[in-house]
Amino acid sequence: MTTATELSEKTIERLCRVYGYLDALRHRGVESVTSKELAAAAGATHDTLRKDLSVVGVTGFTRAGYPVASLKQTLGEKLNLTRTRTAALVGLGRLGTALLDYARFSENGFKITAAFDSSINKIERIRSSVDIFPVRRLKEIVGERRIELGIIAVPGESAQQVTDDLVEAGVAGILNFSPVVVHTPARIVHVDIDFTNSLRFIAARM
Amino acid sequence: MTTATELSEKTIERLCRVYGYLDALRHRGVESVTSKELAAAAGATHDTLRKDLSVVGVTGFTRAGYPVASLKQTLGEKLNLTRTRTAALVGLGRLGTALLDYARFSENGFKITAAFDSSINKIERIRSSVDIFPVRRLKEIVGERRIELGIIAVPGESAQQVTDDLVEAGVAGILNFSPVVVHTPARIVHVDIDFTNSLRFIAARM
DNA sequence: TGTTGTGAACGAATTCACAGCG
DNA sequence: CGCTGTGAATTCGTTCACAACA
Image: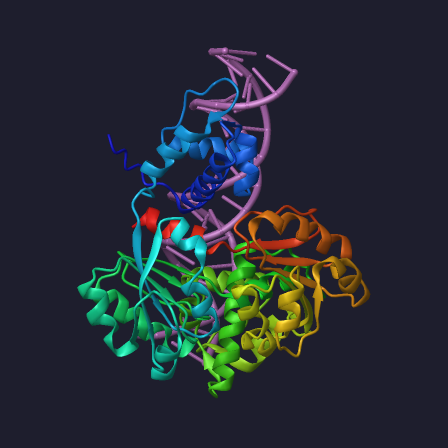
């Protein structure tokens, strides 16, 4: 049943985007959508996107597009996106606090259930419904609460240390906003997002 | 001289990371570095990274690593990263204001010279050294000031409109933080960063 | 020995081309 | 006719293997 056909990273990324787009369509009351439109929303061609869909077993809609609701449901199951995930946020600088109440996380099944900073000052000052702790309690709290994801918004100097602590505490995934590439054991999935590097990339190509 | 050997996107991305890492090494006073270390900093293997370097003509260091300073210089020239670029920031919500004084931008040759929001309220409230304007003046200001880059931090609903305006005003590159994939003419280089989708991607893989 | 440089082999991903369905 | 589904061809990128150098 669960065809663990090892989806490629690119395929997963595109299908995740499609999933989000289908959600938006559903809210707008749209019932049917073509591969071409989905491709545009995912930033791909329709060939590629249909191939992605066929890889996860979505097939048989050989008429005029895919039904929004059921496709979303199917993708949600295939990508394991139906369950809400808990996350720990580390670093409450400007970016961290912006992420702390980034509404789109909670609207899409990601719930930040603990946040950490090294400055007692900040911990006391920030008003939030999320529990905030000093970073030295990271391993303890993340472990106890069985938090699944780590979101890193600390300076580059401490990013690898925070990564190691999160891994030791048992998270399965890490989203790293610091400007260094962090390293994890192979079983941990992580993504590095470096704003400055994205600007460099753009500058180098223009 | 300028071997426009059409670098691949992956190569550019990695070399940009290397460039940033070399800068950090230089500040730490390190003078020499191996391809292995550069590869780790870029999240790649040393084979791949050496191939990247050879593509931009960096070769001939067949002994014990590359000299930090001169390699940084060379990459800076090859990637066109030596000149400071101006950027316009659109959207001053939580993320936008965080980006407004993200120190790493200015430290790395990117200067936000104008910011825009649709809310007069916010425009008046935010204290910043950057000039802030109502978004309806975007085309006018970006055009006049010949701003090169656009950074989008508005909700998904307005992202494509803002994109179109930026393109019309003449920017050459766009960094889009909204949760939709925006579309531009082929001559414009743009990258879409969708936090929620990155979390989805991680969740789907764990 | 440890490191660079590079052609050759390999593998992955996209695009092409076309059959089939409504 | 427009859309889906999929094998084949092609392009692209990485890894391998090894020579050369210090």
